[in-house]
Structures are given as structure tokens and as C-alpha cells.
Amino acid sequence: MTDIQSSNTIKAKEAGAHSTRKAPKGKGKNPFVVSISSGKGGVGKTLTTVNLAIAARRMGKSPIILDGDLGLSNVDVVLGLQARYNISDVLNGHVSMKEIIIDGPMGIRLIPSGSGISSLAQLSYVQRQYILDEIESLDAQTDLLLIDTGAGIVPNVLHLNAAADKIVVVTTPEPHAMTDAYALIKVLAEEYDRKQFSLLVNLVRLPEEGIKVATRIADVAKKFLGAEVDYLGHVPMDPQMQQSIMRRKAASEFSTFTIAGQAWNDAARKLFSRSETERSGDRNFWEHLLVDADSDGLFERNI
Ligand SMILES: Nc1ncnc2c1ncn2[C@@H]1O[C@H](COP(=O)(O)OP(=O)(O)OP(=O)(O)O)[C@@H](O)[C@H]1O
Ligand SMILES: [Mg+2]
Image 1 (cartoon, rainbow, N blue to C red):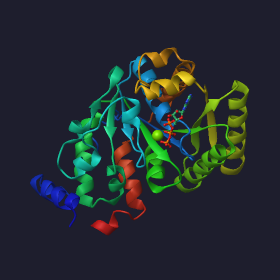
Image 2 (cartoon, rainbow, N blue to C red):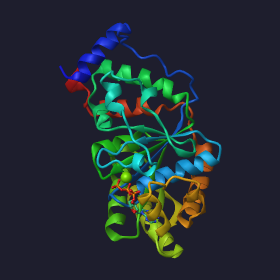
Image 3 (tube, rainbow, N blue to C red):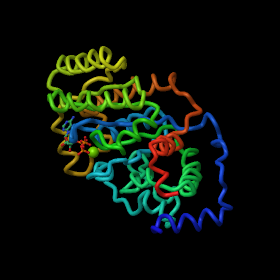
């Protein structure tokens, strides 16, 4: 029995090992969940996530960022923070979900995942109940969960996207990035029945370039997948952004005044005002995440 399994078995026993999960508390209060994803790495997901969070905060929302990137996750670096615990520590029963959340600059909060996110797809039934109970306390604290998913067509990225209310795909005008963005949209449309996407084109030299990229991807997605791809806008290449990353000051009021910061701000306005009207309200991201993974048979192995 693994560390995770044993500690949670104990916790579950203490809690009476409920075998059926009650309906999520506070229906209609689930946070709106937006995943920020890409086919190719290094296209600007993390910067997009952080800047959308800054913009959302300015719009009066209480965003929490979930760092879902299993690779070189760097939301904490961009925010100038150091993560002490992550989701793995919650799964191990060392700390509660509340204790791993870090308060970042400008009222932005972060859930560091570490390798814990992939463990979520390998939990036993009892462990799953435990983590869902832990998460309920989190849902009450936020109206917007932004997930930096990491890149590529890998199970972790696909499950995070499949469970989100809204999927933002980031690409650049570079041909590989565009092909990989389309490949991600294709898998999500064909295998997860997601038919609605928002596209952000980063590192653009001219506005026309962004529109051209978005039109190409949207046309192909419509024709071959029957999927809608909305254009969220373009973000220019901004040398000031690179300097602020080096100074670990990418997330600051400063970003409001940079050209890239303004562009992310416009994207946030489009995204969150639309999202309000699309919000289903009774959808619980975490339950979907775990159930989706479950339907793939991933839980069976550990029961
Ligand atoms: N609009 C921009 N202007 C200037 N530089 C940018 C911009 N967007 C991204 N960059 C540069 O690209 C780098 C990668 O961005 P970011 O870390 O957000 O990408 P990512 O998609 O999260 O990468 P990974 O897939 O490795 O997680 C940044 O560190 C920065 O140097
Ligand atoms: Mg990243």
C-alpha cells in the first residue's frame, strides 16, 4: 500500500468511510473554471493564466490559479512565490487543501499541484471521496478557478480541459504551435465531446497576423470537427514582459501598463463577460475531473 493509500484509508475510516458521496454543497456556487492550454509548450500559457487572473481581480473576481503543469511548472516563479506544499501533500494527508493555497501579489491565490495532479487520476474510491471533501472548502472561497494545464496531448492535460467550463487554447503564429493547437482541439472535440473553444494568439507582430491564425484554426475546426473556436484576441511580443519575468515581477500593477498586459486585459473582458452568461452553475469541476478519469478506468486499478 502506498503512502497516499494508507494515510487516506485511515482518514476515511475516521470519517466513517462514507460509501456514497452526497450532492455537492452550495449548488450554483461552484467557481467558474477556465483551463489555459496549448498543444506546443512555451507559447505563453503561464503568462496568460497569471495575466487573466490579474485582470479578473481588477474586475472584482476572486480568482485562484491551479498550477496543473506537471513539467517545469512556473506559475510560482512568475508570481514571485515559493511553494512549500502542493496537492501531493494533501493526498498524503499531511496538510489540508486550505493550507497549500499561497497568497500571491494583487490578491491572486495559487494552488501548487506538484505531481499531485496526476495522482488524482489514480486514486481509489475512498481517496477520491476524501479529496472531494477537502475541495468543497476551497470552492466556497473563489468564483473563478484558472488552470494552467501544461502542454500537449497527454492524459493530465486532457482531463483538466475536459472538466473545465471554458477552454482557452493559446498558440503563436508559428506553424508548429498552430498544428499542435489544432491537434489538441481535435482530441478534445472528438474524444471528449468539447465543441467550444477560445483561442488566444500570443507573440504576434501585427494584429492581422493574429486574426489570420485564428481564422485558419476556426475554419478547419468548424469544417472537420463541428467545433466553434472564438477569437479572444492577440497578445503582442512585449520586451518589457521578459524583463519583468527576469526580475520575478511579471505579476504586478506594472503589467497593466505594458502593451501585452493591455491585450490580456481585453481578452479577460471578453472571456469573463461571456462566461457569465454561459455558466452552468451546477457543474463541479473536481467531480467531473475525477469522474472523467474514473470512466477511463483509471480508478479501477487501485480499488
Ligand atoms: N507576450 C509576450 N511578450 C514577450 N515575451 C513573452 C510573451 N509571451 C511569452 N513570452 C516569453 O515566452 C516565455 C514562455 O512563456 P510561458 O512560460 O508563459 O509559456 P508556457 O506556455 O507556460 O510554457 P511551458 O509550456 O513551458 O509551461 C516567457 O518566459 C517569456 O520569455
Ligand atoms: Mg507554463
